[in-house]
Length: 174
Image (cartoon, rainbow, N blue to C red; front, side):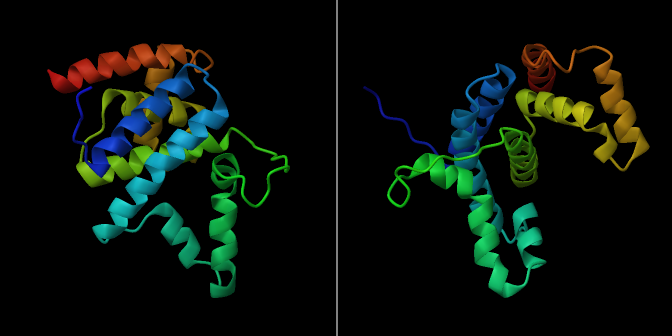
């Protein structure tokens, strides 16, 4: 078997793009969560190493010092539950898969900020996310872009976004 040489950034990109594919294919939300969180941690660490503030950093900075560790634990609780069994081998976790959408959003943003690149599948996810959550957008021009794409795809048919991703990637690489 041939070995490969891979950077942290490339590992995060591969994890992120694969998590998005799984998401669009309605894969197992626990597996998706684990893959996202792996990418997310690398991207956050790389951003911090470049002096960039992450969404989580900004949120934690707004919390009293005595609550910071608690908040970090809450944010990582699902990942830790799915990843470890040393402290809670018989526990049952209540998990809301919707958290994956927001984690993917953060990862796409972090990756794009770090690399100044947004791949086709990352763009397709952004379209899906902001079509679903168009009320979040501040700028009317941004809303118009996403709503224009919404006329061409079915939000509930996530597999269509894989086709959109391929089209966006082809345009990006031409």
